Amino acid sequence: MRSNQAVAAAGFQGKRELRLQRRKLLLRDLVRDRWMYLMLLPGVLYFIVFKYVPMYGVTMAFQDYKPYLGFFESPWVGFKHFERFFSETHFWTLFRNTIVLALYNLIFFFPLPIVLALMLNELRRERFKRFVQTLIYIPHFVSWVVVVGIFYMLFTTENGIVNELLYRLTGEKIAFLLEKDWFRTMIVSQTIWKEVGWGTVIFLAALAGVDMQQYEAARIDGANRWRQLWHITLPAIRSTIIILLILRLGNFLDSGFEQIFLMITPTNREVSEVFDTYVYTKGMTQAQYSYSAAVGLFKSFIGLILVLGSNWLAKRFGEEGVY
Amino acid sequence: MRQDRSWGNRLFDLLNHTVLFLVAIVCVLPFVYVLAVSFASPAEVARGGLILWPKQWSMVSYQYIFSSDTLPRSLLVSVYITVVGTLINLAFTSLMAYPLSKPRLRGRNPILLGVLITMLFSGGMIPTYFVVNGLNLTNTLWSLMIPSAISAFNLIVLKNFFQQIPDGLEDSAKIDGCNDLGVLLRIVLPLSLPAMATFGLFYAVAHWNTFFNAILYINDNEKWPIQVMLREIVILAQSRVGDSGFDETDVQPLTIRMAVIVFATVPILLVYPFLQKHFAKGVMLGSVKG
Image (cartoon, rainbow over all chains, first blue to last red; front, side, top):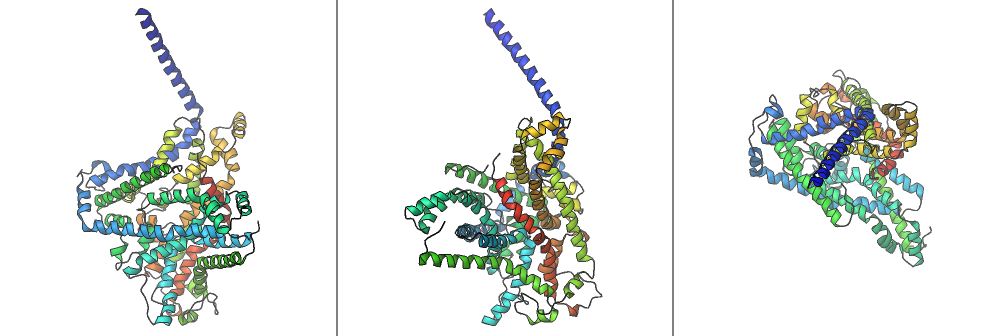
């Protein structure tokens, strides 16, 4: 017994010494890296003030927020704003608009950069390839305001070149920018025009990694171009496609806020209002701060579930997760 | 690598080239059209039709835009937030990325986790607005630069880049009596100039294209950047930009709007060749996991 106690005591002492020693080491490291911590300070402060304080600030969704009372003093009201949001008929309109736009983009936009990248990959002449690449990347870098502005100039019924041609051909004009039936088509075409070229970059990077010997071997075995595409090229970019698809699912509810904000008109609101624009309208123009924060929180919460869920899905498919 | 020259293959190549050529043209044709109309004479524009090269050149739309200081002022605002904002971005991002590139640094992993979380979840528009407002930044140009001082994604990519720099150089500088900040400024940053140029360009493009933050944070139209002004003029078709003394019968609204679009676009096209040189590298940098 006694010897056991002695051992335990010694062990305890040993642990204490170890802890002391660790603390000394920690102190030594902190002093050694003091300049490093000083350099970290502005960035850490930035993330706390502009990312984490707003994250705490979402609690305003459960309050009746008053700007002069702030995040900490405003009265709590529980789920009042959420209950109001879910019971409004507007909720389903927003939900439908967001989902439909996301589906449109997934179906009509998502496959295009892959096809374009495969086509570029078939080019033998390096100079022509560079020429095409140089031109198709440009629209990505201009702002949404410029893109929507150009579309406005091209499609307006007052002297717009598209309507002018249409008028000469059919004798009629179409209000592409005002009619709600054209809204989704306009949104998807703008996205395609702006991002299809840029979307190829990541696939071309993946294609550049394919070993040329594989193609040679396939040709010797008598595989034609389509067979090479099917058995070598596509498998090479399979994981990139899956990762991008997953990223897309994760951002499913982020339906290009700036673009939609610019394209909304009173006549198309029925199909154009999505969660993000609704948050802006209610919060910033109608000063319903807590209600709009609740809508925003609901959207981010669903978004987070989608991101984590799709990442889990990716891992199950044997792909390396994104996070 | 020669393909066999069968008819099928040749036909495919021909089609492939044609389609890609058309896609490339469609991507730039609208810019050419906008540029051409902005320089075309009012009479030619009034006649209508597709103008890709003006027959009669005219600077009247540009004279009109510069006849009052509304648009020149917004251009200056944009130049200011682009230059100062990018410098802030680069300073903040590199200062934070360098310490995080050292695995020996205690507390590194919790901080990195904290950064990653902000990529997954954010407070959203309204709470962020009240933080910016609470700091009295609204209605100042700081609101367009400080709240976006660091992009979490760029920070992680730059951290990974710094990690690849061999430690030997830094150790020798330290033996010579440099502290860590000195090492960053004298050794690491000069070695990373191409990377810094890439990040600088991407940050600068983002600043030049700043639109919604200005709508959100800035009420005073004298502080509007060019993108907000562009929306007013082109999409909302509001606000006279020219001087009231200017005879408006001489100018077509269409050409004025085109000229404003040109101003919002040209700086991007000017830096584009440099961007293009670097972005492939940037994308590759991003794919390196750390």
